[in-house]
Image (cartoon, rainbow, N blue to C red; front, side, top):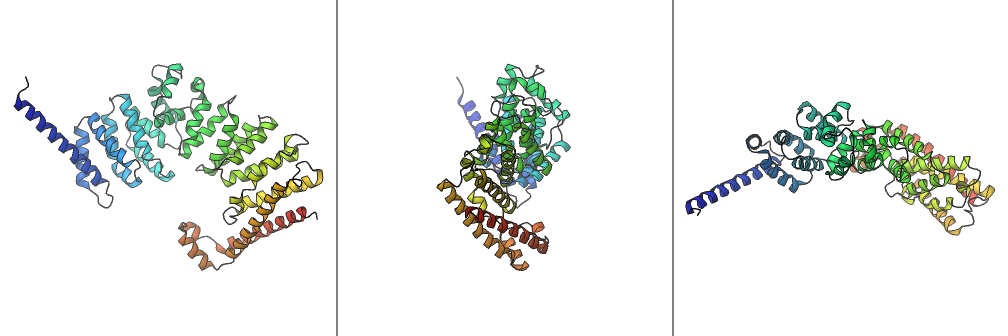
Length: 439
């Protein structure tokens, strides 16, 4: 039988442990107060992480992180030395614990900017842990480009004794937490041949779904390695939806080249419906909208018959004449001009050879009239805003929290440039009205 004194001692130890646990949670909350340095609490937490078991401290840290969900960048950078210690303590822990830790920590950083992610990356590589695979995987999530050296250090964690992705590894991939899946998927940019059995196309979707533009860029790059995609239209739409948001201009331009190369292998009908599906996408950037208009004009110009010279064009016209774009001329100046030029092109062609039957469809004509009125109204407001004194413009920009670099721009040069653009829009509007009136 267990003696009363033994039970009492165990209870006392348990209570003492719980009080210690509460102290640690309190220190973590103190450190989260960015108004104070809290050096004493940081020192205490460092000692706890260094002296306690990795599994036990992980349970405490993970519970605390779960209550935060998202960490401010400055707080994350304050605590990153603690996170690094825990990575080292978990070196020999169960793979499941390491996976959960990386995933939890990564999801606390998903709102970081490109500059902030780069600062995290610089800290991680400066304070590297060569013998800790989970730490390398965490680094791969913040690297703008994964390197051969980095991929070589993390692939064994995923492949085990295999030299390629066999059925066992492929099955394991889909059981991994999202952060590990993204890291594994990025390895395909270095060794695409290893991932053939897993399907490069499926991997791209994991990268597309990431909120990190660097991961999305890798997904777009991987499209070049897909020989026979099962859902080519979805790939095309995703590239157009994501490409303009990539961090670097050259990456955005390259994404459009990859999209055009992908669609060049489509049939004429598949190309048409891919353009339509892209225009129907709710989160399509204006620059992609403009690119599709220009691409459609090229398709129609080069076609002598078929779907691009048929009334099917009427089906996508409402998506081209997006009122949310046309009614905001100040923001979407070049896109509005592209849309109007395309509309003029369609009307001229339809007036001459009646291939689209735009003029015979009342609903379409009413929509065109509505869009013209919207552009005229937006143009009037834009001209008024453009003629405002420089001081008034600066005041308005400050109210809108525009960054200082844009405020320091050459207002006279921009005003003159806007005048030319407004004149071009007015000219195209007049041409469209003349065509509609049969002049």
